[in-house]
Image (cartoon, rainbow, N blue to C red):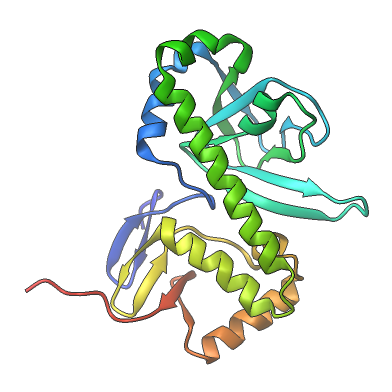
Length: 233
């Protein structure tokens, strides 16, 4: 099997990392202005930024994986997102200048471009579409967070899990004869951290969803079942 791919019942596709995907136009606009930032590498478990700190910096992930989390007063960690290649993190607090509400830690060795908003004023003046795109992605993150908070009040673990899986399906799924296959991979522990339920409960809930015919597993990846993908004649 290829190192950067996976085989799913005869389908070979590139393995995806993370739980967030950005519009390709924004990715292109940020990489076009990479010279305004500086390359930074974070080793596994290194902290990009911490909850509560004030910083004018944000990060464009080139390669690797970054976990974005909130730590509650009781010490419990709530995972918000896993940011893979071609994503941005930390931009909200960098622009508003207020204490960060989340922390970011490198899950793997991660290469980034670090931007400082104090040096980007001229770029935004000359290229307002870049600023508009950053505002759009920040707004989308807020909308997703609001939806997740609404589902966290649900008493049913299956509802919380399906909210997450359906969101991932919109970004990281490919056609499969029995539905849509997620090409990003999450462990039961990660699903639990993102839905506010224990790993054991995640395992039980996923089993119930399988028994109900809602999901299945193919080569270790979750299949959201539905109508078979159309075949070309």
